[in-house]
Length: 369
Image 1 (cartoon, one colour):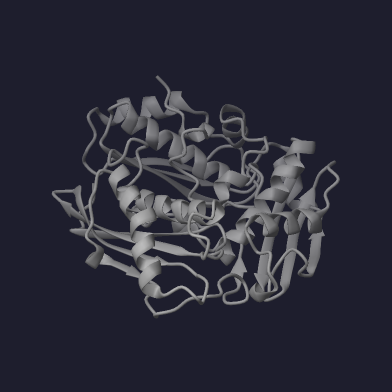
Image 2: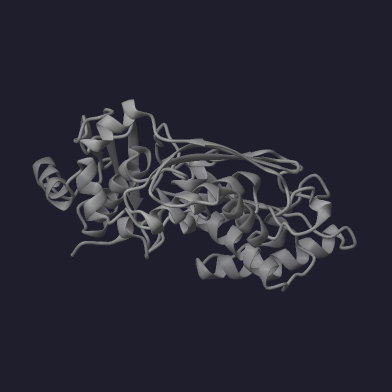
């Protein structure tokens, strides 16, 4: 439900430089939590031509081989040839130290690891209570990766981006206005062939799954006319640069911090998951058609300094009923969120691609009956 007549969202494939970084950072976090549930992790990754840089803070009883973790992720993503000027043999520089004791003293008292504001959103446009444009964009990116990994289209190479524009009528999605795809491929394959087969193997089945149709004339593939080498040799990647992709595709506000590479004591992550959990349950339980939940925290303090909800005039109950539902649904203290959503587990690597929301297996996506 939007006031726009058209709305556009984008996503990126797993081999996109920024997403390489998100996955490396979350792979480090998962390995730390696998060995030590109390691990404190805040790791940033940077990738560029033949170079990986890891920096941040880790306080953990875990034994972590940072270089091995990074190289394993790079290989999994298909960067396995010298022509990419980036692969599993690229140098990995590590600049990781322990968490600042001044931050740790607040977290040790079960307080927030930082200040900041977080937002959660839900609407009834899809069965997972997410906006249509971002879910279409994610599905297209995922499908491109699938057909590359299975070699259904063997000429595809790592990296890629998708973008979808949806036309709305009276706040409801009606049709797909345009799809934009960017994907690198073998030089021997013509752009015409790539466009035809991307339409057949990616766009058409994804649109059909979402109960839409689209004409080929509304599709743009590789708008510059050619793209053969993607990845970090073409575009530097950094952890946390795809906040809009990671959340709601621009359909809702976003907080000030990214998610990947951060353990759940960092409210940038856990607070955003809590806000989504509350918003989704408000809509799923029929209390409103569209909801945005806002939380804000102060470093070292246990409870949020702000907890608000906006239903954009779609609420089916009075404000006091909505507030009572929110308060009873989840303890939004830092410790309360971590405990209720069971966040001190190695569950984060799958969130580093195709969005952090709308995946039913994640604890913050559960609907409470």
